[in-house]
Length: 407
Image (tube, rainbow, N blue to C red; front, side):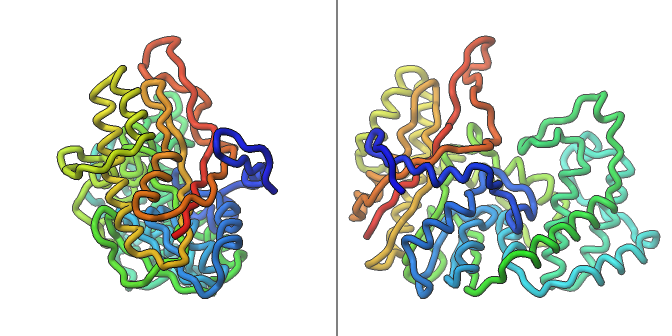
Protein backbone atom coordinates (compact mmCIF):
# COMPACT_ATOMS: atom_id res chain seq x y z
CA UNK A 1 0.00 0.00 0.00
CA UNK A 2 1.39 3.37 -1.00
CA UNK A 3 1.26 6.26 1.41
CA UNK A 4 2.37 9.88 1.27
CA UNK A 5 4.73 11.25 -1.38
CA UNK A 6 7.84 13.01 0.00
CA UNK A 7 10.29 14.74 -2.33
CA UNK A 8 9.35 12.67 -5.38
CA UNK A 9 9.65 9.35 -3.56
CA UNK A 10 6.87 7.17 -2.24
CA UNK A 11 7.10 6.05 1.38
CA UNK A 12 6.43 2.31 1.66
CA UNK A 13 5.93 1.53 5.34
CA UNK A 14 5.34 -2.14 4.55
CA UNK A 15 8.95 -2.32 3.33
CA UNK A 16 10.26 -1.56 6.84
CA UNK A 17 9.58 -5.17 7.96
CA UNK A 18 9.57 -4.15 11.59
CA UNK A 19 10.21 -7.11 13.88
CA UNK A 20 11.50 -9.37 11.09
CA UNK A 21 15.25 -9.98 11.25
CA UNK A 22 17.13 -9.86 7.95
CA UNK A 23 19.33 -12.77 9.12
CA UNK A 24 16.80 -15.48 9.94
CA UNK A 25 16.99 -18.90 8.30
CA UNK A 26 19.59 -19.31 5.59
CA UNK A 27 20.38 -15.60 5.75
CA UNK A 28 21.99 -16.25 9.11
CA UNK A 29 24.51 -18.60 7.51
CA UNK A 30 27.66 -16.53 8.06
CA UNK A 31 27.50 -12.89 9.12
CA UNK A 32 27.90 -10.45 6.27
CA UNK A 33 27.73 -6.64 6.26
CA UNK A 34 24.95 -4.57 4.68
CA UNK A 35 22.73 -7.47 3.61
CA UNK A 36 19.51 -6.72 1.75
CA UNK A 37 16.37 -7.66 3.64
CA UNK A 38 15.10 -10.88 2.04
CA UNK A 39 11.46 -9.79 2.54
CA UNK A 40 12.11 -6.71 0.41
CA UNK A 41 13.56 -8.88 -2.34
CA UNK A 42 10.59 -11.25 -2.14
CA UNK A 43 8.19 -8.33 -2.60
CA UNK A 44 10.07 -6.95 -5.60
CA UNK A 45 10.33 -10.33 -7.32
CA UNK A 46 6.64 -11.04 -6.76
CA UNK A 47 5.67 -7.67 -8.21
CA UNK A 48 8.06 -7.33 -11.12
CA UNK A 49 8.96 -10.81 -12.41
CA UNK A 50 7.44 -14.12 -13.45
CA UNK A 51 8.91 -17.62 -13.00
CA UNK A 52 10.36 -17.93 -16.49
CA UNK A 53 12.43 -14.76 -16.15
CA UNK A 54 16.09 -14.38 -15.18
CA UNK A 55 17.11 -12.41 -12.10
CA UNK A 56 20.52 -10.72 -11.93
CA UNK A 57 22.37 -9.14 -9.01
CA UNK A 58 25.55 -7.40 -10.22
CA UNK A 59 26.80 -6.74 -6.65
CA UNK A 60 25.44 -9.94 -5.18
CA UNK A 61 27.37 -10.07 -1.91
CA UNK A 62 26.24 -13.02 0.19
CA UNK A 63 23.46 -13.81 -2.24
CA UNK A 64 20.18 -12.64 -0.69
CA UNK A 65 18.62 -11.67 -4.02
CA UNK A 66 19.87 -14.85 -5.66
CA UNK A 67 18.59 -17.19 -2.97
CA UNK A 68 15.17 -15.56 -2.88
CA UNK A 69 15.01 -15.84 -6.67
CA UNK A 70 15.91 -19.52 -6.99
CA UNK A 71 13.46 -20.45 -4.25
CA UNK A 72 10.75 -18.65 -6.19
CA UNK A 73 11.52 -20.68 -9.29
CA UNK A 74 13.62 -18.11 -11.15
CA UNK A 75 17.06 -18.70 -12.60
CA UNK A 76 19.52 -16.28 -11.02
CA UNK A 77 22.91 -14.85 -11.94
CA UNK A 78 25.24 -13.14 -9.51
CA UNK A 79 28.54 -11.33 -9.91
CA UNK A 80 30.85 -9.99 -7.21
CA UNK A 81 34.56 -9.26 -6.73
CA UNK A 82 34.62 -10.93 -3.31
CA UNK A 83 35.24 -14.73 -3.33
CA UNK A 84 34.06 -15.10 0.27
CA UNK A 85 30.74 -13.48 -0.60
CA UNK A 86 30.29 -15.85 -3.55
CA UNK A 87 31.12 -18.85 -1.36
CA UNK A 88 28.50 -17.83 1.19
CA UNK A 89 25.94 -17.21 -1.57
CA UNK A 90 26.57 -20.68 -3.01
CA UNK A 91 26.40 -22.45 0.35
CA UNK A 92 23.09 -20.76 1.16
CA UNK A 93 21.75 -22.25 -2.08
CA UNK A 94 22.73 -25.86 -1.34
CA UNK A 95 20.39 -28.76 -0.79
CA UNK A 96 21.02 -32.42 0.11
CA UNK A 97 24.32 -31.65 1.84
CA UNK A 98 25.56 -34.18 4.41
CA UNK A 99 28.01 -32.78 6.94
CA UNK A 100 27.56 -35.13 9.89
CA UNK A 101 29.88 -37.80 8.53
CA UNK A 102 32.56 -35.12 7.97
CA UNK A 103 32.19 -33.82 11.52
CA UNK A 104 32.38 -37.35 12.89
CA UNK A 105 35.63 -37.92 10.98
CA UNK A 106 37.04 -34.60 12.26
CA UNK A 107 36.28 -35.48 15.87
CA UNK A 108 37.70 -38.99 15.56
CA UNK A 109 40.96 -37.75 14.04
CA UNK A 110 41.34 -34.53 16.04
CA UNK A 111 44.40 -35.65 18.01
CA UNK A 112 46.20 -36.80 14.86
CA UNK A 113 45.75 -33.61 12.83
CA UNK A 114 48.85 -31.49 12.22
CA UNK A 115 48.19 -27.73 12.35
CA UNK A 116 48.50 -26.11 8.93
CA UNK A 117 49.10 -22.41 9.57
CA UNK A 118 48.83 -20.13 6.53
CA UNK A 119 50.42 -16.72 6.17
CA UNK A 120 48.19 -14.37 8.16
CA UNK A 121 49.03 -10.72 8.77
CA UNK A 122 49.74 -9.96 12.43
CA UNK A 123 48.74 -13.50 13.33
CA UNK A 124 49.68 -13.35 17.00
CA UNK A 125 48.08 -9.94 17.45
CA UNK A 126 44.68 -11.25 16.41
CA UNK A 127 44.74 -14.84 17.77
CA UNK A 128 45.88 -16.56 20.95
CA UNK A 129 48.51 -19.28 20.47
CA UNK A 130 46.23 -22.24 21.26
CA UNK A 131 43.57 -20.77 18.95
CA UNK A 132 46.09 -20.63 16.10
CA UNK A 133 46.96 -24.28 16.64
CA UNK A 134 43.35 -25.45 16.74
CA UNK A 135 42.37 -23.38 13.69
CA UNK A 136 45.37 -24.94 11.94
CA UNK A 137 44.09 -28.43 12.75
CA UNK A 138 40.65 -27.71 11.29
CA UNK A 139 42.36 -26.19 8.25
CA UNK A 140 44.48 -29.35 7.88
CA UNK A 141 41.29 -31.42 7.89
CA UNK A 142 39.55 -29.20 5.33
CA UNK A 143 42.55 -29.15 3.00
CA UNK A 144 42.44 -32.95 2.80
CA UNK A 145 38.72 -33.16 1.98
CA UNK A 146 37.90 -33.80 -1.68
CA UNK A 147 36.12 -31.00 -3.53
CA UNK A 148 32.42 -31.26 -2.72
CA UNK A 149 29.37 -29.38 -1.50
CA UNK A 150 30.27 -30.49 1.99
CA UNK A 151 33.75 -28.97 1.77
CA UNK A 152 32.33 -25.61 0.69
CA UNK A 153 29.74 -25.75 3.44
CA UNK A 154 32.35 -26.47 6.10
CA UNK A 155 34.61 -23.76 4.67
CA UNK A 156 31.86 -21.22 5.39
CA UNK A 157 31.51 -22.50 8.96
CA UNK A 158 35.31 -22.31 9.29
CA UNK A 159 35.29 -18.73 8.01
CA UNK A 160 32.84 -17.64 10.70
CA UNK A 161 34.77 -19.64 13.30
CA UNK A 162 37.92 -17.68 12.45
CA UNK A 163 36.10 -14.44 13.16
CA UNK A 164 34.39 -15.71 16.32
CA UNK A 165 37.58 -16.97 17.98
CA UNK A 166 39.74 -14.02 16.95
CA UNK A 167 40.55 -11.12 19.26
CA UNK A 168 38.39 -8.73 17.28
CA UNK A 169 35.60 -6.90 19.08
CA UNK A 170 32.38 -8.82 18.58
CA UNK A 171 29.57 -7.16 16.67
CA UNK A 172 32.02 -5.26 14.45
CA UNK A 173 32.71 -5.79 10.77
CA UNK A 174 35.98 -3.85 10.76
CA UNK A 175 39.11 -4.98 12.59
CA UNK A 176 39.10 -3.58 16.10
CA UNK A 177 40.98 -5.47 18.79
CA UNK A 178 39.38 -6.27 22.13
CA UNK A 179 40.44 -4.42 25.25
CA UNK A 180 43.21 -6.11 27.23
CA UNK A 181 40.78 -6.88 30.07
CA UNK A 182 38.47 -8.67 27.61
CA UNK A 183 41.35 -10.58 26.00
CA UNK A 184 42.40 -12.00 29.35
CA UNK A 185 38.92 -13.48 29.89
CA UNK A 186 38.42 -14.66 26.29
CA UNK A 187 39.07 -18.42 25.98
CA UNK A 188 36.95 -19.82 23.16
CA UNK A 189 36.86 -23.51 22.26
CA UNK A 190 37.76 -23.51 18.59
CA UNK A 191 36.58 -27.03 17.84
CA UNK A 192 33.28 -26.56 19.68
CA UNK A 193 32.67 -23.25 17.90
CA UNK A 194 33.28 -24.86 14.50
CA UNK A 195 31.10 -27.91 15.16
CA UNK A 196 28.25 -25.83 16.61
CA UNK A 197 28.31 -23.38 13.71
CA UNK A 198 28.33 -26.24 11.20
CA UNK A 199 25.30 -27.86 12.80
CA UNK A 200 23.47 -24.56 13.19
CA UNK A 201 24.02 -23.71 9.52
CA UNK A 202 22.87 -27.18 8.50
CA UNK A 203 19.63 -26.79 10.46
CA UNK A 204 19.04 -23.40 8.83
CA UNK A 205 19.54 -24.94 5.41
CA UNK A 206 17.25 -27.94 5.82
CA UNK A 207 14.52 -25.88 7.50
CA UNK A 208 14.32 -23.42 4.58
CA UNK A 209 12.51 -24.03 1.30
CA UNK A 210 14.56 -25.82 -1.36
CA UNK A 211 15.78 -24.06 -4.51
CA UNK A 212 13.73 -24.54 -7.69
CA UNK A 213 15.76 -22.39 -10.07
CA UNK A 214 19.35 -22.50 -11.33
CA UNK A 215 22.09 -20.38 -9.79
CA UNK A 216 25.12 -19.07 -11.71
CA UNK A 217 27.91 -17.21 -9.90
CA UNK A 218 30.84 -15.29 -11.36
CA UNK A 219 33.85 -13.69 -9.69
CA UNK A 220 33.71 -10.54 -11.77
CA UNK A 221 34.21 -6.77 -11.76
CA UNK A 222 31.13 -5.06 -13.25
CA UNK A 223 33.31 -2.33 -14.75
CA UNK A 224 34.22 -4.93 -17.37
CA UNK A 225 31.78 -6.50 -19.87
CA UNK A 226 29.56 -9.00 -18.08
CA UNK A 227 30.68 -12.65 -18.30
CA UNK A 228 27.43 -14.26 -19.49
CA UNK A 229 25.28 -14.28 -22.64
CA UNK A 230 21.78 -14.35 -21.13
CA UNK A 231 19.44 -11.39 -21.35
CA UNK A 232 18.27 -10.20 -17.95
CA UNK A 233 14.62 -9.57 -17.09
CA UNK A 234 14.99 -8.13 -13.61
CA UNK A 235 17.91 -6.64 -11.70
CA UNK A 236 17.67 -6.38 -7.92
CA UNK A 237 20.78 -5.15 -6.20
CA UNK A 238 22.20 -2.92 -3.51
CA UNK A 239 25.45 -1.49 -4.90
CA UNK A 240 28.11 0.03 -2.65
CA UNK A 241 27.07 3.48 -1.46
CA UNK A 242 30.59 4.84 -1.80
CA UNK A 243 34.26 3.88 -1.67
CA UNK A 244 35.18 1.20 0.88
CA UNK A 245 37.39 3.57 2.91
CA UNK A 246 34.38 5.56 4.09
CA UNK A 247 31.48 3.09 3.84
CA UNK A 248 31.53 -0.71 4.24
CA UNK A 249 35.05 -2.14 4.01
CA UNK A 250 34.14 -5.53 2.55
CA UNK A 251 37.78 -6.41 1.99
CA UNK A 252 38.72 -5.67 5.58
CA UNK A 253 35.75 -7.73 6.76
CA UNK A 254 36.69 -10.66 4.54
CA UNK A 255 40.45 -10.58 5.09
CA UNK A 256 40.56 -12.85 8.17
CA UNK A 257 38.59 -15.55 6.42
CA UNK A 258 40.39 -15.33 3.11
CA UNK A 259 43.81 -15.63 4.74
CA UNK A 260 42.76 -18.81 6.55
CA UNK A 261 40.93 -20.17 3.48
CA UNK A 262 44.03 -20.08 1.26
CA UNK A 263 44.20 -23.39 -0.60
CA UNK A 264 40.73 -24.45 0.55
CA UNK A 265 39.03 -22.21 -2.01
CA UNK A 266 40.46 -20.45 -5.07
CA UNK A 267 41.38 -16.86 -4.32
CA UNK A 268 42.20 -13.91 -6.60
CA UNK A 269 45.44 -11.97 -6.22
CA UNK A 270 43.90 -8.51 -5.98
CA UNK A 271 42.86 -6.41 -2.98
CA UNK A 272 39.08 -6.43 -2.67
CA UNK A 273 38.81 -2.89 -1.35
CA UNK A 274 41.23 -1.57 -3.98
CA UNK A 275 39.17 -3.37 -6.65
CA UNK A 276 35.87 -1.93 -5.40
CA UNK A 277 34.10 1.00 -7.07
CA UNK A 278 36.12 4.13 -6.45
CA UNK A 279 38.74 2.07 -4.64
CA UNK A 280 41.63 3.10 -6.85
CA UNK A 281 41.36 6.59 -8.33
CA UNK A 282 44.52 6.00 -10.34
CA UNK A 283 42.56 3.53 -12.50
CA UNK A 284 39.52 5.76 -13.01
CA UNK A 285 40.08 7.31 -16.43
CA UNK A 286 36.48 7.39 -17.62
CA UNK A 287 34.94 10.75 -18.44
CA UNK A 288 31.20 10.65 -17.95
CA UNK A 289 28.29 12.80 -19.11
CA UNK A 290 26.89 15.60 -16.99
CA UNK A 291 24.25 14.57 -14.44
CA UNK A 292 22.53 17.40 -12.53
CA UNK A 293 22.33 15.59 -9.19
CA UNK A 294 25.94 14.44 -9.38
CA UNK A 295 27.12 17.95 -10.27
CA UNK A 296 25.23 19.39 -7.31
CA UNK A 297 26.64 16.75 -4.96
CA UNK A 298 30.23 17.23 -6.12
CA UNK A 299 29.85 21.00 -6.06
CA UNK A 300 28.55 21.00 -2.48
CA UNK A 301 31.36 18.75 -1.24
CA UNK A 302 34.03 20.67 -3.20
CA UNK A 303 33.25 23.81 -1.26
CA UNK A 304 34.35 22.00 1.90
CA UNK A 305 36.99 19.52 0.70
CA UNK A 306 38.10 19.24 -2.92
CA UNK A 307 39.95 15.95 -2.31
CA UNK A 308 36.86 14.27 -0.88
CA UNK A 309 34.86 15.57 -3.83
CA UNK A 310 37.33 13.91 -6.21
CA UNK A 311 36.99 10.62 -4.30
CA UNK A 312 33.19 10.74 -4.51
CA UNK A 313 33.35 11.56 -8.22
CA UNK A 314 35.74 8.64 -8.80
CA UNK A 315 33.20 6.28 -7.24
CA UNK A 316 30.41 7.55 -9.50
CA UNK A 317 32.56 7.28 -12.59
CA UNK A 318 33.04 3.60 -11.77
CA UNK A 319 29.34 3.19 -11.03
CA UNK A 320 28.48 4.76 -14.39
CA UNK A 321 30.63 2.20 -16.20
CA UNK A 322 28.96 -0.62 -14.26
CA UNK A 323 25.50 0.70 -15.13
CA UNK A 324 26.50 0.89 -18.79
CA UNK A 325 27.50 -2.79 -18.72
CA UNK A 326 24.36 -3.81 -16.83
CA UNK A 327 22.02 -2.05 -19.27
CA UNK A 328 23.71 -3.79 -22.20
CA UNK A 329 22.37 -7.13 -20.92
CA UNK A 330 18.77 -6.08 -20.26
CA UNK A 331 15.85 -7.61 -22.14
CA UNK A 332 13.27 -5.34 -23.79
CA UNK A 333 10.87 -5.91 -20.86
CA UNK A 334 13.32 -5.54 -17.99
CA UNK A 335 12.90 -3.96 -14.58
CA UNK A 336 15.86 -2.62 -12.61
CA UNK A 337 15.64 -2.14 -8.84
CA UNK A 338 18.65 -0.37 -7.33
CA UNK A 339 18.44 -0.16 -3.53
CA UNK A 340 20.62 2.72 -2.38
CA UNK A 341 21.29 5.02 0.54
CA UNK A 342 21.95 8.75 0.43
CA UNK A 343 25.07 8.98 2.58
CA UNK A 344 26.57 12.15 4.00
CA UNK A 345 30.03 13.40 3.07
CA UNK A 346 31.37 16.51 4.78
CA UNK A 347 27.81 17.10 6.07
CA UNK A 348 26.56 17.20 2.47
CA UNK A 349 23.93 14.71 1.32
CA UNK A 350 25.01 12.57 -1.62
CA UNK A 351 21.91 12.33 -3.83
CA UNK A 352 22.50 8.73 -4.83
CA UNK A 353 18.87 7.88 -5.60
CA UNK A 354 18.64 10.75 -8.09
CA UNK A 355 22.13 10.11 -9.53
CA UNK A 356 21.27 6.45 -10.20
CA UNK A 357 17.95 7.45 -11.79
CA UNK A 358 19.66 9.96 -14.09
CA UNK A 359 22.36 7.48 -15.12
CA UNK A 360 19.82 4.83 -16.11
CA UNK A 361 17.77 7.45 -17.97
CA UNK A 362 20.92 8.31 -19.93
CA UNK A 363 20.92 4.71 -21.22
CA UNK A 364 17.27 4.91 -22.27
CA UNK A 365 15.43 3.49 -19.25
CA UNK A 366 12.29 5.13 -17.85
CA UNK A 367 11.76 5.95 -14.20
CA UNK A 368 8.88 3.88 -12.81
CA UNK A 369 9.01 4.90 -9.15
CA UNK A 370 11.35 5.52 -6.24
CA UNK A 371 10.20 3.97 -2.98
CA UNK A 372 11.63 4.69 0.43
CA UNK A 373 11.89 2.37 3.41
CA UNK A 374 13.11 2.98 6.92
CA UNK A 375 16.29 1.11 7.84
CA UNK A 376 15.55 -0.65 11.11
CA UNK A 377 18.06 -2.47 13.35
CA UNK A 378 20.96 -0.73 11.61
CA UNK A 379 24.53 -1.92 12.20
CA UNK A 380 25.66 1.70 12.42
CA UNK A 381 25.23 4.58 14.89
CA UNK A 382 22.46 7.14 14.39
CA UNK A 383 25.19 9.79 14.47
CA UNK A 384 28.88 9.84 13.63
CA UNK A 385 31.81 12.24 13.86
CA UNK A 386 32.85 13.08 10.29
CA UNK A 387 35.79 15.23 11.35
CA UNK A 388 36.79 13.19 14.42
CA UNK A 389 36.53 16.42 16.41
CA UNK A 390 34.88 16.33 19.80
CA UNK A 391 31.29 17.51 19.60
CA UNK A 392 31.19 17.46 15.78
CA UNK A 393 28.29 15.12 14.98
CA UNK A 394 26.33 14.33 11.84
CA UNK A 395 23.47 11.98 11.03
CA UNK A 396 24.04 8.69 9.23
CA UNK A 397 21.57 7.07 6.82
CA UNK A 398 18.11 6.27 8.13
CA UNK A 399 16.41 5.38 4.84
CA UNK A 400 16.93 3.19 1.79
CA UNK A 401 15.64 4.19 -1.61
CA UNK A 402 14.42 1.58 -4.09
CA UNK A 403 14.96 3.20 -7.49
CA UNK A 404 12.83 1.30 -10.02
CA UNK A 405 13.57 1.71 -13.72
CA UNK A 406 12.03 0.10 -16.83
CA UNK A 407 13.39 -0.59 -20.32
